[in-house]
Picture (cartoon, rainbow, N blue to C red):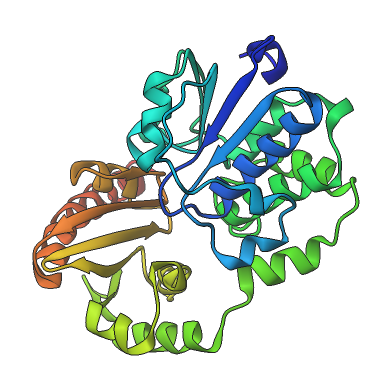
Length: 329
């Protein structure tokens, strides 16, 4: 794909959108692109559509410009989809459908082919923010744009701990840091810092977690009654599955929270032996090899049983492969 300004040409109205329940990479990539286009194309109308971002992202310049209301009917010259396919745009999907041209930038393996007229989709990239940076010209970059993109990369790499962190990721992060913003404060306040209630819910999820498959898998869940008791919303549950994943001896972690009667949002994390993207895809979701999610129907017991069947198959296959390698050597 050409640089974004070349791809846009002389378009007058441009919309940007990301997935429902926007995470750090979604917010960072969308806001980085928004700030860049506002600067590079001062005469164009640039709009960014997202569900209300979490308060922790208030540190991003221009976040107050995010449009959450999609009731107005309008046709954009270009709609840019970041960090997702069109199916997860939420209410903003209607602008994608009517746009004269669509561009998709994504790093999810479940959207490897892209959904736009023009696509820049690389499943081996750490984040959509990394890919957005590659589409920008240095002459329009500044500290606020760099900060937004750096935030996105940090969140999707777990502060450069996850396996999706590559030498290219670190090179780009270094270039972004050179613009001069307080990266340490940004990481603390948007990634590590939790409210007292968030810590309480995390503690409860850990206390009620269950290991199975000889300790190779672990799961925990939060129901609507518990969420109401602590007065928390789904955004407050971020990080629980990652904490479960780092339990010693665990290969795969599962966290579920209830969305309505007999329906759960499932987050999956792997330490390498389990391809959770394949499992999530099997149940209608998607994501990455080591981090994925889906929505499932039934009780917690039903969901975990169905997931564990797929996890067990993969672990048995992996164990067989490793045994074969040992025998051959």
